[in-house]
Length: 225
Length: 285
Image 1: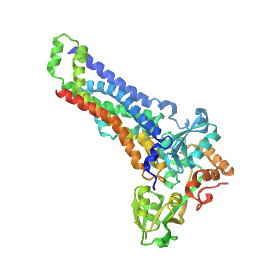
Image 2 (image 1 turned 60 degrees about the vertical axis):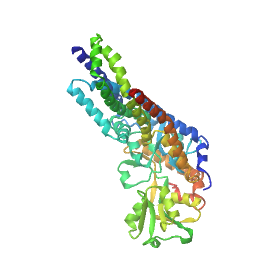
Image 3 (image 1 turned 30 degrees about the vertical axis):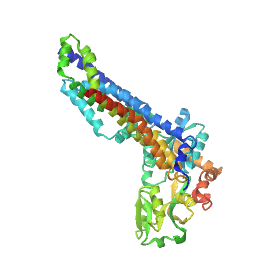
Image 4 (image 1 turned 45 degrees about the horizontal axis):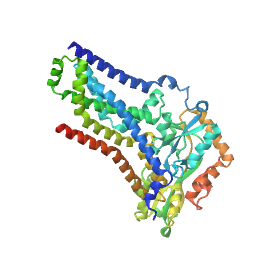
């Protein structure tokens, strides 16, 4: 009982393994964000459409991903879809797809909100200058909407990174999963290791997420000035 | 207005295409292996693939866990490596927890489960078991100075268990005169007995052997309670090919004395001298 749990962190390759777990979490989150934001931007645009049916379809899409808990999504993509379709991809790929669809749904709402809140006069001035619809979108709407949606997007990114902690449910070796392995391997000899491991995991998530949070605050402040 | 409409159409089309693409990606395996005759986990399929996917625990020493070098070790893991070696293929481990062992098989995420998987009538409905390679039963641990050696001593006393274990099951259905104090995790239950909150603690005997080794003030007064439970390899329901092969493999390994060696290397350091290999392993003829 006299062993200090902190020694477990630096035993063998434990520390490197935890960093490896963090890397898995980060790249899945990054890929999911990349694909999710691209798809979400398009869906967000479609949701400003005049066509009621189009709006309804993407509205349902948004509500589905917003309402279904992420754990359920991951189970659906990892266990149920493969059983139905005989598809067999590794957990990390399925997780990336599930997360990307979730991000796209959430982001579509952010984009829609931002596009709607660009002042009408801006659009009209653009048209008056003789810009085409595409030019208007690219040079007038997009830059202003981007400014408006940036804080919410960064917020979404931090949420995605945090949510990767659910990946252990589907056998992906993420940070939490590796931490769990180390805790259980040392539970008998170092019962206090659990505090140190979770402490380090907290710190690692904080190091990844806090700069994003700061950035979002800065952007929000700049917008107010 | 017409221009705007066209733009919208393009955007909707783009979004739909992207979504359709993702759906197709998720569904594209449909044609390749949906029929049951095309068993993706048959011995032939595994040999052709060159790897066998085996589900193991990653956090249950001494059965399946990961050491500080990041290497998978344990009693089940050693068996898994031997199985792969005898099949002449590489092994790929799929880490599971207690709750997703069945789904992992059914979703073809693993060919074989070697994760301290106890045979139960309910599980028999959803997976196929090969020959068992280990046996466990409920044991009861108590302080040495107030040792409990017979179940009758427990009447009217408090017994500590973890929810969902075979021990809880056994006492609830067979020993109604005993007061149960239920906890959510192993850590909690062992803390409870140390704090004197019950007269004894009941759990799988193998855990208890390992625990008393670190806590010499306690003893496993009752080693076997109720029927033996068997731990066996499991394959997806209907996978005859791999099931037959695994049965032969278990027989062969038993004859070679593999399980005794496995016991001595992986389990003995945890269980100590109080336990004999024959308390745990099965040597099927």
